[in-house]
Amino acid sequence: MRVLVLGAGGVGSAFVSIASSRDVYSHITVADIDPSKATAAAFTARGNESGHRVVAAQVDAGNEDQVVELASAMKADVILNACDPRFNPSIFSAAFRVGCNYVDMAMDLSIPHPTQPFERCGIRLGDGQFAQHPAWKNKGLMALVGMGVEPGFSDVAARYAADHLFSTITEIGVRDGADLVVEGYDFAPTFSIWTTIEECLNPPVIYEREKGWFTTEPFSEPEIFVFPEGIGSIQCVNVEHEEVILIPRWIDVERVTFKYGLGAEFIDVLKTLQKLELHSTDPVDVRGMQVSPRDVVAATLPDPSELGDKMKGRTCAGTWVKGLGLDGQPREVYVYHVVDNAWSMREYGHQAVVWQTAVMPAVAIELMATGVWKGVGILGPEALPADPFLELLDQHGVEWEWEDYVDRAPAPSKSPRATA
Image (cartoon, helix red, strand yellow):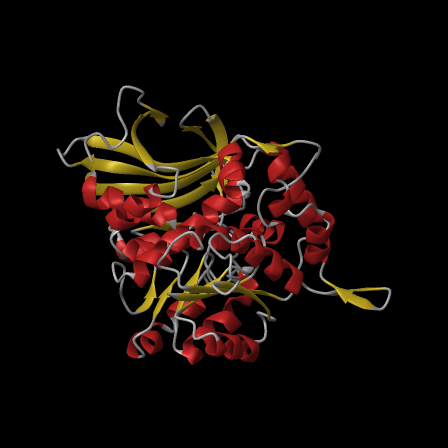
């Protein structure tokens, strides 16, 4: 499998480290607008002593023609989009023009409803991509969208629960929490602040079978969720996320939500940015120069990929599922994946959040390369079989788990996967 990785930030670089250790990846080109980042990612790749299996390149991901030229020159089988989702349209279109498969970790950006943003959906996440489904299907190409950790693993977890643990599902709620701390910083996000602002300040989407998709106020419906393995109780709030769009397309469910465990301080910072309009992506004039306020915020904060040696703790991604078990009795299960930052830094040199995000497309593309995951058109992770993905994920050093929940607290007497 020949892969073109666009974006050599934290996630793109971590993907190169992970994928380069797998034999199925015959060639990887990692490209970035900053050639030094691409070179650094290629230099740290595993099994690249000759320097020919993983190479670096410079490209402007927003320039569709440049992406087409590079992907064609290196004969890419698949393009992995590891850039901010604002670059999706050019990369997505370039892959189609080249005639190769496509994988991203975040879908096309949404646009809120012009008059009722906290009640009705405007343009939803991924609407532009799903509109291209017939064209991709007719061309025999696969675009696997939302294949990171959340979305991505969380969708696979929903598929697994539907196939193996439940006869009827009433609610699926993706719940994300961590006990990570960054030493030496009062405020240091562990993931792209550009993307975090986008998804946290946009109107969250909720799905209900009777109503379809609708929106609510940011940070709505606060709840306390008990995360496993000692991470503990964290307040989670509604956030706009792809799983709410993807899961109901392929899984029969009454209600779907996504909630982040952000913490009061993080929410206050985001609200302040919004109040000052520093979340805006519209350029403003600053002494004769046009700059985006959000880009300025991102530039003033530390690079999440460089925080690993200052981070301690674990990150947990998972999907809480409620319904009737295979025996017809009420059941609640949390299917999850926990990564300890000390482990990911020791084994791969990448902090936990970016490693956990990057390992998921590495697994997915390997399944595509071996023909285990196959299909055409625009597909979400839950459209494909969960078992081979989860089996292969375990080979990367951090196993996924599931636990029965009682009142949203894990039942300690239940052995994860013991009855799966």
